[in-house]
Image 1: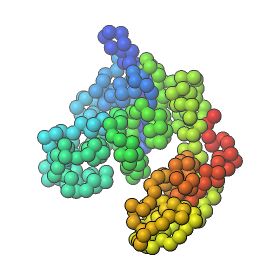
Image 2: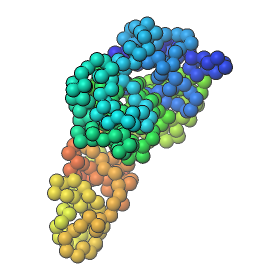
Image 3: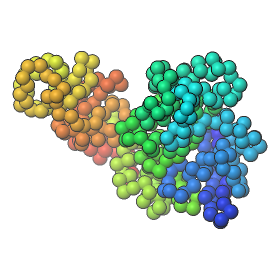
Image 4: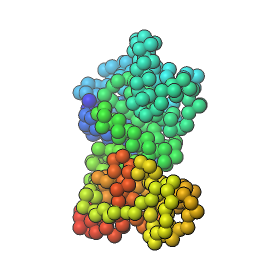
Length: 363
């Protein structure tokens, strides 16, 4: 279901213009990210889709129909909406929070709760959490419940207003991964608001960069915005390191993956003159064993050196370079789709591929 802004303006009685003549189309089944500094109108633009904010002029079309032609309550019941801090009802259980929209739509309590349980599983939460209250969950779990509740509307449209900004970076990355997985599975039309250009680049099929005063500065694919900013404002906003971000769009299929020596946790490792990666019984990395380490008996995880991100084979070259540069051994650990170690890359190997494809990075 496409969303179209046609010359949309929001001007408040005091003269403040929050959104100024916004025209763009959010394509069906894609993620479009509104990004920009505080006061640029990105949240106001989002809220005009479900009429939490009414436009002063112009038209917002949902599936070709003016949103103002539908009563606000009816419109909102058919649009998923996720906000910062999840916005859960504190006095209701997790299951009843998710069941809210189906109940408002006239479903019976049993059917609504059964649907809520399915949705908790969809967003990666165990069923037993359904009996808890929001205060008993971590921030990341609360945000997943918020996503599940938004999906309960079973609408093709999902609005997300800085939903992951209140959680720590590790949890945030996990939530981003979960959203991309859900999108691949469900194919919603998603409008996502953030002030973080890295998040916008990672999630968006299209990115709308907005400037203070509510004007659209640039609208295009993340790759276009990074490589070809239209003016100094966009170039400054996406950052001087946009060339590194641009590596997110360069394939790493040409990067050579070398064998790496592994040792299993719980075994007697013996002597080694080079860095070795320790793995568990499933072949998943657990840490590094430095050269010439002396281990008394069986190898334990306390004997290992932590550090270094992992590079999943087949993903963009940015991850390969990050893995190599962050590793204490200067070797980026490469894993397969199941998280098992299959080899290693060096920064030099990655840079050789980048140098062979200079168009892959933004200038």
